[in-house]
Length: 223
Image 1 (cartoon, rainbow, N blue to C red):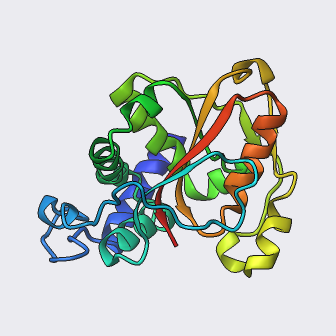
Image 2: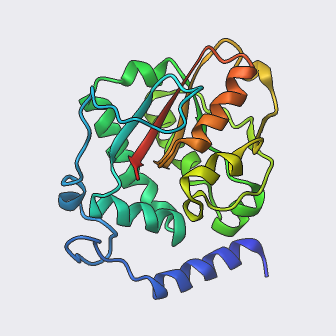
């Protein structure tokens, strides 16, 4: 069976198993309605929390709070229930955060690098959620995306590990294909959820070693 037909079949099955209704108010035919989406709290800078691993990252910008029930549900649907169309409402939240905190210059003066998935994980999920979010930002601000950062090591899900094992799990997981693409440039790493910062920190280490000028990170929520 052709790959496109297989994808359509899987989407059909997915829609039967997981019928759309708003995660908050149960309105039919969409995962989150605009009214409930606008209830998701957006952080106001300056608001910084201590991240356990931030040795190579200049600043981490966090859009919202993972303990907010609405954003937790839509992020989990996005990542683990194959709902790639949730990129739009999640990007909407990030854009609200950028606008609220006047960070458009940060975006436009950076190269966006989504945290990559290992090719095996990509096949399991069918898309890279961080790449979709970066794509939404790139479209809005006409900012380039660099996909030269590769995840070479298949690792356990960070959520399955305790805090002490997360950094060890991610060491040497990334490699940069082309140093010239980021040499002397400001980088903005894009990811969905941050807990200890181990993955972002390891990616930033590789980028700094390759000559990146600054490395910041922008995420949806902190767990």
